[in-house]
Length: 415
Image (cartoon, rainbow, N blue to C red; front, side, top):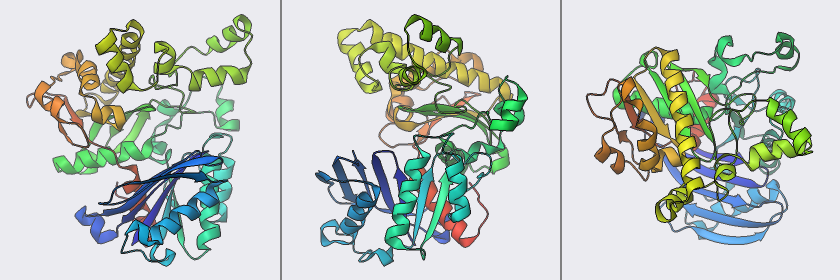
C-alpha cells in the first residue's frame, strides 16, 4: 500500500509517501517513494518536492491554504515531472496517516479518523492551540480531495506517553485542577521516542519488556523520555512543549513566579511573556545570536563568543541533569539513546553531554562518536561501559505509515 503521511503546521505542510504493508513491516523493508515540504502556506510559499532517487524540485508560488498545498502535492506526484512510476493517479494512494500533536486523555493510540475522533481532536485545541487546528486543516483538506472512501488515520504525539503513572504526570497543584481541566503533564515527541526505542530493541534483539532506556530527542525542540518495559514512564515536556530541556527558542524549566515578576518589572502582558518564553528564549535568548546549534558551535570555535559558549554549556548541562534524574528513576537503565537533528549530527554536543557521566558507568568512545553522523546509527560508548550510549536517527514518518497500516488491518500495535 502507498501511504501518504501528512504533517501540517500552521503555515507548512510536510509530506512523505511510503510504500508499506504488514509483510514489508515484518521485513523492515518499507520504501519511501517521495517527500517534500511546503513552507509559508497562506502567502507566497516556498516549495521543495523530491521523488526518491531524483534531484529535489524547488519552486515558489502563492498558496492560500492547506487545501491548495495538498492539491499541488498531489498534482506533482501524479505528473510526469515527478517520475514516480508507481503512482499514476490519486487512486494509487491507498491511505493517509496524519501527525496530530495532541490527543489528550481520550485518544491514547493511533485511530481511524471519523466524526467522533475529529470532535475529540477539536476538544484538545485548547491544549494545543498552535498545532491541533493545523492538523485538522490537513485532515479536512484530504477529505475534500479524496472523499470519504479513503482510510485516514491519526497518530498522536502524546499517545506514547499515555502510559505514564500519576506520579509522573500530576503537578503539585490542587487536584481539582486536574479533575476539572486536565492540568497535567502530557509529553510530546512521543512518536520519535517510540521509534528509536524500537530501533534500540531490534538492534540488540530484545523484547519490549527487556527495554529500559533513556531517549533524548535533541533538536530545535528537545525532550527526554524514561522508558521501562518498552513504555514511557516519564518525560520532560509537560502540559505544553515549553517545559523541560532548554531548546532553540523555548526556555524549558523555570520558576513560574518569573511570570508575575515580569508583569511588574517590564509591564508585559501575559501574551507577551508567553511569546518571550516560547519564541525568544532558549539558545536564542541566551546567546543573543541564533537558535541554531550549528551556528553557535561555529561562533564558539571561530570567534570564541562567550555567550555562544554559555548557551551551549547550559543546553548540555540540562541534558545531563535529565539523564541523571531518569537514571535514578529507572534504577540504572541500560543505555541513553540520542536522536533528533542535534542528537544525530553533533558529536561535539554528545561528547559534552557524556563528559561527566562516567560516574554512571558511561565512558565515551571518541572515535566511534565522531563517526556516527549523517543518518548513521551506532554505539558511541566503550564496550565495557555499564551504561551505554547509542545514536539512532528518528523516523516519525515511517512509524506513522506503519501505524496507518496496523489500524487499517486491525493489528495490535507492536512498537
